[in-house]
Length: 214
Image (cartoon, rainbow, N blue to C red; front, top):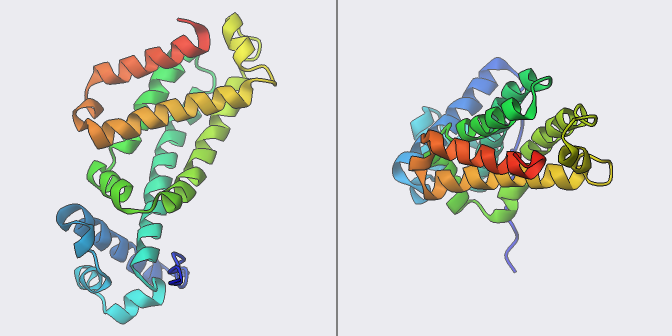
């Protein structure tokens, strides 16, 4: 049985110059993936595109798999950071305002580089994608938990039931997975939906109907 190749980086950049090198490598990988496809993204091509030697690339990434994992992690973090930046200012906003903004943020996050998102979804093994996406989802889930908890005394009876201690974990799971799945599928299957305001409105309506029946 062949040994599974490591997806861990060989070493982490500690200095500015090293970080710039890693960034150049990831940018080169992104360019080749989105412009030429996964099969063309071998380490020699990536090193050439990044303007470094193959030996320099191997100082940080032992193989193509470790490069893909690093790119997936970077992409997942970009998604989480964009959504976090939007939600941070919405903790005191009512659901009717916060939910549409959440949907807008998740759509915008998935549209950062839709072609890269599509390639990674098609080519990276599902187990590795899940591992990286779960890190981002955990950050977003925690923000949703904090936000919903603030509305435990809401005048909406349905919402009070949803965020009861016995139900809140299920509510957060349904809420986060619904918006993530719809936005992810739109990028992959219907890219034209991403810039369609009606899609954003329909997803927000769906979530509000679930949470407060309105």
